[in-house]
Amino acid sequence: MYNVIVYGPGCANCTNTEKLIRQVLTELDVPFTLEKVTDYQAMAEAGIMSTPTVKLNGQVMSKKAKVPTVDEIKTWLGKA
Amino acid sequence: MSMKLLLKLGGALLLWIAVYFNLQTATDWLVYDLLGLSKTEHFSAAFAFFIFETPKVLLLLTLIIFLMGVIRSFFTPESTRAVLAGKANLPSHILAALLGVVTPFCSCSAVPLFIGFLTAGVPLGVTFAFLISAPMVNEIALGLLFSLFGWKIAGLYLAMGLLTAIISGYILGKLGMEKYVEEWVYKIPPMDDNPEAGLTAVERVDLGVQAVVEIVGKVWIYVLLGIAVGAGIHGYVPENFLASLLGATWWSVPLAVIVGIPMYSNAAGIIPIVQALLAKGAALGTVLAFMMAVTALSLPEMIILRKVLKVRLIATFIGIVALGILMVGYLFNAIM
Image (cartoon, rainbow over all chains, first blue to last red):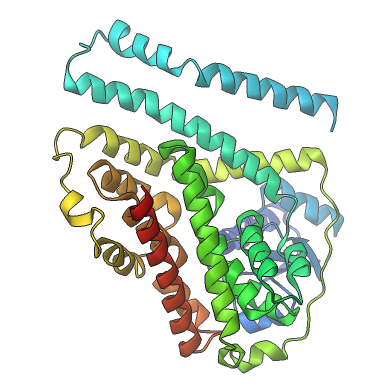
């Protein structure tokens, strides 16, 4: 089971990140939940400073402030 | 760094040099020999300019964006925050403005970053110095200015942008406006640093390449437009068409700032406009003030900032930054 949270206020980068992760997970046909957090206060409480930030099963995966590549997402999923 | 990576980088650099320094020869051959255009005609000169300028600018841009991408891989918002926490003196404002240039930053993360800085004990003024410099003095703005207008204008923009950020941040800090930050921000517990494992040389180069693909892939159209404007309007619009309106008159700078503030665009989007203004006799200080106002202050950003800042602080922020940009514009116009 993959529990993914994408933190981002809704700019193009964040929306694309969410879309791409959903696409990869759907293609891999694995069970997952995908949540998008857009509220600044919730973001701050989770300790998020750059967006988009991706959390997988509670672990921060990327803080590069950019849309991940498909390969990167697959590497993250392998680690979880 | 592995041998293989070094060879690849060396090979790429050699290829870059070979292409870059033969552009003029290749253009002349293409335009005048192969296409047989006349050297005296106005159209062929404009066409040759476009054919020469486009690859030249894109090559320079690629190199700069790549280098900046690699440099940025050494910085994270977390490491920057750790460096800036605690100190509210002038050097820390200077450091914050400098780090704003090299820390990876997407303008939509301005608010999370703002909160992250404040809760970690970065003073308000230092935080502002960072937040003003980051969107204004970035690799896209510098890369484009350098490739299109040369290192002098890029350097001046860098220096003046930093100066505006440092002074504005310093003044905002001195005003003691912490009470105009929304109360809930200070109630957020300090965040973990979530340290990330160091990157390998290959990963850093990869990040540089990704930056090139992403940024050049996005801005090439504006670059082309900018060059086309430069080549195209030449001769059709009188050379000093704008000189009377946007030359070094006392009111051209405030006009540029007032028009620029509500506009929302990244550095790439306004490059064609900058190109056109400069080509037609607008004063350099006026044009740079316009570019700074567009990138550093924008209506959507203010609406987002309203979630963490009270109106009074936002208004002060706009006022001080606008004043800083105004002075930069006047200074430029006076010395150029």
